[in-house]
Length: 65
Image 1 (cartoon, rainbow, N blue to C red):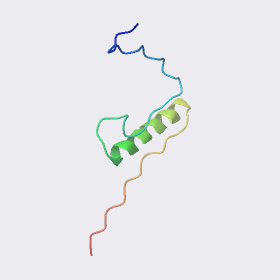
Image 2 (cartoon, rainbow, N blue to C red):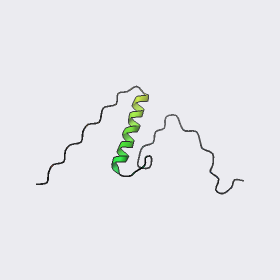
Image 3 (cartoon, helix red, strand yellow):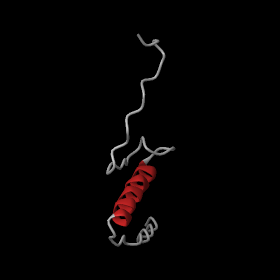
Image 4 (cartoon, rainbow, N blue to C red):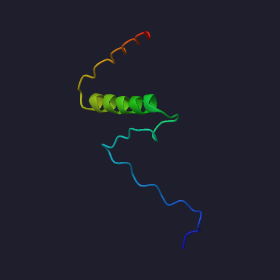
């Protein structure tokens, strides 16, 4: 019988699994979540020999009228 506080053994990581989202990176908020998805997409493209487009600059905010 295992001790109540003993952690179970880790399972092997699936070969083609990628995590993206708010709980996969330190910090919080939408920019972190979006960057996590972009990193995962870039890694998938690199692994499969596909080009990954460079990020486009964000549009500038318009001054309030």
